[in-house]
Structure formats: structure tokens, C-alpha cells
Image 1 (cartoon, rainbow, N blue to C red):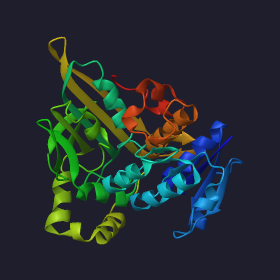
Image 2 (tube, rainbow, N blue to C red):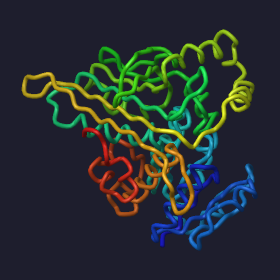
Image 3 (spheres, rainbow, N blue to C red):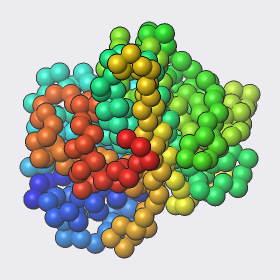
Image 4 (tube, one colour):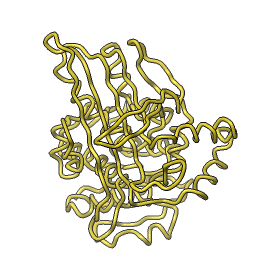
Length: 360
């Protein structure tokens, strides 16, 4: 069995560990500073808890590890990537933060192992699917990525409940966003570019958020007229978030904003992940559009209930790890998500969560 180090015993990290351990091919060491979180890990002979204080050197715990998987807040990712490179382990993470990813890309230049950041849902799977949809066009016109992690039963004015990292949500609402407009790579503000759309019979609004494109804008630069990523929410959400961030100036006090959101919005495991990807371009003289649309729900995993965001995010990083272990991906340097072949991803035992799409 391959040894895997998963840093982070939160909801996503626990789901990753459970998926990998029950596959029979991986022994998973879960590293976290919280002894209570480690004690709550699923009981399985292939899951091994290990205390790791925030300032501890992770390198001694990586001895013999095939890969390190980061399932912690974005500001810890660069340090973990450095440790993985130092001991010769592959590195995968879930970060949506642009600065963290840039630091990891710099490390990858001389790495003897693979560094694969942004292996979650968005960034992550959406770039894999979008790159696949782009194939076969004579020329590309637009590439639109729309993703939402939403409560199935919203009952407040924001139309939102907490289903993943509050810190991550705030970061993507505040940081600038990459996009391509009129063929030029540029930066656009978060929470702008509001649009209304219907996906699989449900009305949503969508607006710019940071990080969801991953490296796709750089891969498609010069090939597409318009490329953007927007988050899906129920109508009215963006207006209220702009009120909190801009008029109440909570953009300048993210700790307080996190306290407000976590104190007022309950968490939910009754969520849904909605993915809609639209690619248009010229083929044989015609303007043609191809789409991918999918809803992913929570499920029961080895006796434990997991949410839709746990299901989609953990499955994605596990599928990329599996493809790496099966030598279907480069084993050194930076590996971008769009380098992963969609058919191989969907055929994978973990990636199959995404296979039942409305249209591919």
C-alpha cells in the first residue's frame, strides 16, 4: 500500500482519508493539531492519526510517503509544498488562493516530484471538464464556468448556509479575479459581473469570485475571446454580501465577518453542488456550443453521512492522486488540472461521482 499524508482532519480531510483507506490501496496518516479531531477519525486499520502542531516540522512525518495532500486553510499550503519537495513526496492540495498557487508553481520548477495544486471542485474538476469541452473546435469564442455549493433548503435572506470553509468563502469574495475579456487576460473585481441564469430548472444568480479558474486562464490565453468563472447563488445573495463587505466595511475586518457569518448562519449537510460549464466556438464554419451540467448531492460513505461539498471535493483530489499513482499523469514538476484527461478522470473509481452529467 502507498503511504499518503493528509494534513487536516476537518470534514474534507476526514472524507479523503476514508475514501483512500477503504480503497485498499493506500495507508493514510492524518496530521492535525487538534487531538479531538484526530480521535473522531473513522476507525480503520489504514487510517493513522498523528498530532502536528502548527509550528512543527512536517518533514519527519513524511518519511516513506508517496504524497502529501493538503486539506487545510490556503495560507498553510506553501509551507506544506516546501516540505513535500524537500523529502521527495508528491504534493496535491485544494487551495483556491492565487498567491499560494503562485508560490507552489515557483517550487515546481526544480521539483523531482509532481506538484498538483487546486485539485478540488473549483478550482479543480471544472478546469478538467472545460479543457475537454474545448477540444475539437476550430476556434474558441467563450468559456464560462459556473459553480455553486448551496443549501438545498435555504431559509434566510442570503439564501446561504455554511457547507465548507468560511475563511475560503470570504477570501474568494474579496480577492481580485482573473478573466479573459476581448482576448486579453485581466483582473476583475469579485462580486461584480452579476448575471441571472437557469441551470437544470433552477434560477440562480452568478458573479465573479476569485480562484475558481485555477491556471485555465493562462492555458487558454490567446485562444479564447472570453473566459470567466462565477459562483452560483440563489437570487439576492450578491446584493446583501456587497452591503456587508462594502457598506458595513467588513471587507477590512475579515475576522469579524467570519464571526458574524458563523454566528448567524447554521452549517448544513443538506447541500447541493451545481456545476455548469459552457464552451462555444467555431467548428466547420458553424458557431457551436457544448455544455456540462451536473448536480452532486451528499451521500453515506462507509456508514457516515457526508455533504455534497465533501463528496465532490474529496472525490476530485482522490481521483487525481489515483491517476498519479497509476502513472497516468506526469510525475515531476507542475501538473495543471487541465492536463488531466476527463475520460480518465470520470472512469476513475473516485472521479465517477462526476460521471452522471446532464450533458458532456
